[in-house]
Image (cartoon, rainbow, N blue to C red; front, side, top):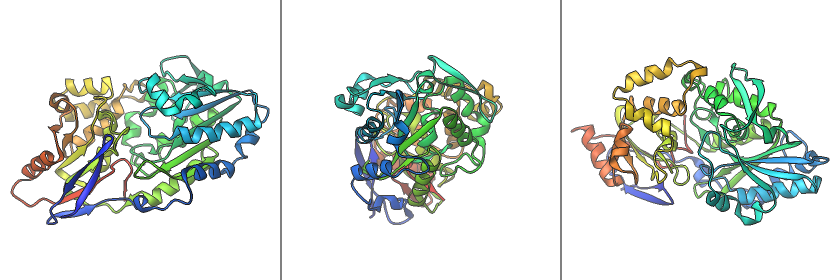
Length: 422
């Protein structure tokens, strides 16, 4: 029987699937990709030979205030690897510049001191001032987005002579891909701007899907925000299944990002199948640290499960639900169809916190049953209208029972976040 390994928290879960009815494990070719150098070499080479702009040390010449945007605790970006390379290049061009590391939290909770120490290490934190963005804190009004929303951005970033960002690129369930421009919007945007950018019309748009930037209204506003903030240089990496850097791109916030997206699109895409039961994970920690983040993997699984089928999601969710509004909205509702209709009718300027995540989870729940394997209390899982299970074995028993007397077809997507179904 085929044995499949699924990332779960800091470890893994495995399951042997009976061959009868098993359609296969949808594993992107990235899992067997052989990188062209060590992680350090890949990052250094990308920064040394940027795409679409001069080298970073040239951009830094004459600059006095430099801000580097870094990802927060919800992203597995290897900042300890990337930041020293960026800092060395900046110091090469502007040895006396004041450098600020700004944690781009978007609307997430603030990154804790302990999380910062783990992410940056004492040697990095000592080289620059470290600030954490607050979407409800002081922001500057930068006019309007192409879609009409107000563009509010972090003042510290806007006051910089040079704005740089690190990050990583993976499929994103409505922005197309993570990375690049997302460091600015939602990364350092005001709450009002993030809410507008994540409005119901954009989320429902046919071009707002994993692996696509063309005609994607979410992406268009994000890129405009990055250009307005004068994001001059990015260094983004692609991570392999063991969270190791396998590819790096650096340079112009649009052109370097597009090069990275092309790589991800090629190496993370697999042919779509349709099954009665789809088993997936949210890629392990930190991506599976709460229910909120797990919606990303569920969105991928929805594209492979038959209407009325079952999705088994493996997400430890050690951090709980992940969003107060997200949780409260599901606790209050009994009628999922009515809840979805209310969201769809909401005007962009009236978008509520976590509305987009509710909208996408509702899309999943109205299509298939979700059996959620986690460390959460069963009542919390039920509050999200999902079925709790304490193990993958228990979840499969439930899924087969829900399928009835017929022999169900089963597909596995070990990494629901890092897989594009075509």
